[in-house]
Image (cartoon, rainbow, N blue to C red):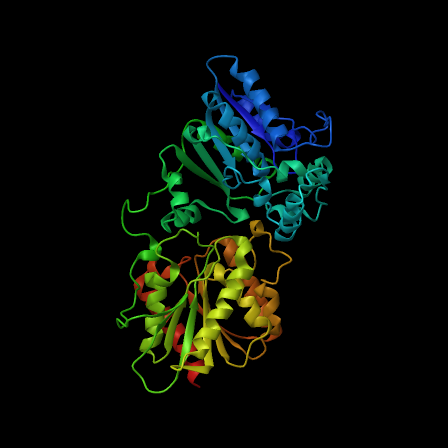
Length: 506
């Protein structure tokens, strides 16, 4: 018999699992939704000092009670914050745990508190300040009905279910978020399954791309004991699709699911495949975090600066400015008589946009100061997650910025990025773009979550009269340069580059 022990996320207790637990039980499984001290009404805190260790002991108590009976396979399920006490408990009872299910959550590391997974960037900073002052007592008030979106996508949750979620929500003891997770490493031997909720911004393909980037920290996800599932819903699948979640948990318990491809197992990953256009083999001129590809032409030349997407893990090798796609774009610009520029910026996490923006600004100063560059004729071209970095340039376009381009960009923070109150919101910023020309390459087969941000931007641009040119790649996916039909992609790239060059030379 399979025994599911399930631990809820922040602000939520055992009741949130009710429908999923009933479906698992009907399928013949034993189910335990763990009441957490200081969160669940039937487990009040004996003191104000409730921490992560308290909740780890709550989970261990259930494991020990269940583990006393033989012939049972225990599957631990941790949603959101709940993965932290799940890992802490499994690390101390690895012999009793057959599998751990990560339900739409991150990958907590030893010594790191759950605070690191709080999606709201502003709140995370406030809590980090309290952690530095060792102020672990107290509680974090639960969200109101309209505030849940700050903690994850509510896609798929009915109005009634959202009302219920709000009514059952409880304050979260601060110590549970601020106390570091302590692991011995024993939990590493336990098989795992990740269940990703795609409407919250994460998919198996996205995780595969992160693995392909070559970050050693991601390599463990290609172990044969690691499997993945997707659910096309928001962050609370136990409320939006409890039957589907139960089905996935049963399959996970059986060891089913998709497995990731190890780096180097087959053909090169998409970001290391050749650029689809033939371009001149110009050498790079490396200046700090910037590479210039300078054409053989007289006088200072306009420049096109290509800003990679992300987040890209800090350990990724090669770094983005050496990816064939970015180098190809820069050399294509040079073939048109422009100085092509690539750069590395430090967008390693969704909390790094301000740092990445500073890196891009510093790159612009370096490029404009180069005597081979016409400092008054510059274009910026952004990709993927780097699209959020367009906000600064749209809000206050400098006179020397003659064009802004973007390929398959993300133009509004995704639900799980916690950036709702940040300045990196191009959909809002485009109203201030004025006469700045914007060239947008739109992928026809973009993921729904990213496509929604692009369409919101297009609508906002039309509403404010922005100078927007759309270059559509109807059959293109995210990262279409190396993924899709060559001729359609080549045509779109040539069209977009000519549009940018025209605005730099006109």
